[in-house]
Amino acid sequence: MQLLYLACGALLLTAVLVLWRRELSVIIRVFAVQGAALAVLVAVLAAQENSVELWAVAVGVLVLRAGVLPYLLRRALAGAGESRRETRPLVNVSASLLAAAALTLLAYAVSQPLVALAPSAATQAIPVGVTVVLIGFFVLVTRRRALSQLVGFLLMDNGITAVGFLTTTGVGLVVELGVSLDVLLAVLVLQVLTTRMRETFGDTDLDELRELRD
Amino acid sequence: MSALGVVGGVVQPVLIVAGSPLLVGLMRQVRARLEGRAGAGVAQPWRDLRKLLRKERITPRGTSEVFRFAPLVLVATTLVVAVVVPFVATESAVDPVADLFAVVALLALGAVALALAGLDTGTAFGGMGASREMTILALVEPTLLVAIFALSVRVGSTNLGAIVSSTLHDPARVISPVSLLAAVALIVVIVAETGRIPVDNPSTHLELTMVHEAMVLEYAGPDLALVELASAMRLSVFLGLLANLFAPWGIATEATPLAVLIGVLALVVKVGVLGGLLAAGEVFVAKLRLFRVPELLAGSSLLALLAVAASFFLA
Image (cartoon, rainbow over all chains, first blue to last red):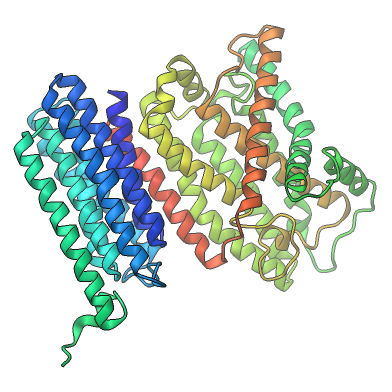
């Protein structure tokens, strides 16, 4: 149980670090740590339920979220050249950290009815998952670089997965497999898109793409 | 008032006063060695203090009583904290004062007295240092309160002695997410509050960057000695608090000479190791720009808030 809560703590801490740090390479490393924490969370649930299926999911989560996705992101970053920092987010870093504090309280408030449905040690941690979803969404809307928006999207997905496992102890291998493939595909498509954008405009700052050009 | 409390109340202030300049000396020595210098030796801060204490008392023209009393207030508040906080023994001589809010308020009182003294001199540097110190303090104090509050939630008491002895009885609590988040927040806050490197550089007198040094620029002789001693004591008090909140092992729970001796040794070792780590860390980081400091402190206060939130979610 202590290990489950520790994994939840790591999820929260890494979500905050993604918001806090500016260097994209650090953000990607933190994201890989978060994937590992998610895998630990699933593994703890698997050990509790004693189910082989959940163990397989845990290994899958570890490979995909702590291995493949960070690798793809790093490759996209290596191609990016000089734009390695999130220089001017729409909301500055200290304000976004305070916003994250507010989002945490919001997540706690909205997930109270969910926890009350079936109070157990795992469902107690639902607010953590909801917080990660909200912080991911916040990163998605306030960052300018395509790559950090991508990390925001993946953060949301991590949060959704965490909530899924905490509420139902596993949504089934097939569903999880489908979702994982979906995410992988989304990242691959976005990576290609980022590369194309940079080739065309020389930058991945999405705010520059507001106007139409010939 | 128990026997253990009295023993702690006598041993702790003596240990802190005698040991804190040595801690500063140790940290300087570690830095010097890592930077490839020989260093002045661990006892150098005591030699400096002795030299300063022998000098004549002198105060700048136009300063008032505020300037003269500030070092005394600073030393006195830190001494009270050194008496009551559970460093060597779990029980406190004056139990009601060993409360989280009272201790943080006492520490803040000392810092405010020094900032007022900086303003009282009427010089540009004094005012600038005081205004910077207040900016940092305003962000540090709530974080400090919230981070320790997160630890007090599961104990059900804000008494520091109660928090320490409950951690002693249930060591598994140390590796809970609440403790980890609170520990990270507390470390950042302690670095900011004691004016160590990413926030302030204690060894510089460069106009643009100094915070603490700018406030005490007008002090000389015995007053300067008091200010220096008090800031060394604050550093040891904060490090001791950090060590005992998260790793209270070795602290005396009964009033036998052996237990107290072990408590003293454990405190010296823990604070020494923490100080050495802090000094070694300082070698590898550059000072932050002043305008980036609020960002660091906002991050640590968020972590403290998350620690409190986690102590409610993951109860």
